[in-house]
Length: 338
Image (cartoon, rainbow, N blue to C red; front, side, top):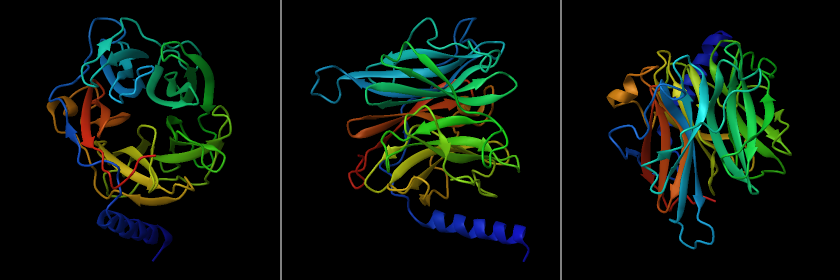
């Protein structure tokens, strides 16, 4: 058996093992909260072609003792007719009906953002500061960037934090930074997307002491693609991970060889973010509605926003690169979120 055949056989057996082993998720079965998009393109300017791939964070009301009191803030990717992306801002009290601001809160300015724009945000709050990872796209290169804020509306750019083409195994663009919300072993950690030499998009991992300067933590992808499975072509981080007593729970977006995007879950060691414990063998969420199957890019559900409200989790996703949907799942007491 040659090396390539052996590797394919090993991945096949590993996939079977993961599929047979239940993943200790902190949430139950997902269900859509709305049969229609909760945000759609509008107007003729900056959000006319698409509104998708949102980051969402819950901001508690000041001095409120009620966990239900507060505001859901959504930063979403909005695209105009020329294909340039900006980040829009929307608010909600129930997590479903959002009111949008008329102007974007982040627009392309620097050379690494011009023409293509600012794309695919992810949000995490650490020590009173909001950290926003996003993709800066110049229509030539895409690179993982960072901005910071104390109010979610005014953002200070921190520049490119993972340059394209310069990784240990990544030979292409960098995107999709999902930051673990707490330090582990004295470091902050971030899962991200890169492209390996075989042209598949896989997941990397980096660490930082200050959230601004990042060092690659592994010589190979921390979560590789799997031949013949729902994540054979793309393995891309979703929202910032959930820390539980069982591990680091990372929702991710997988695409197969036909570029159908579905949702998976991986769990990494709570003490070592490089160590994979379990991984779903089958997707937990997939395109079903017409507006998830037909759009700028067909057959896509792309989870990027996550918030917990009481005894349930809310998951926000881009649909067909045109719309935004929301799903919910009950929080399971058997897996304690920390």
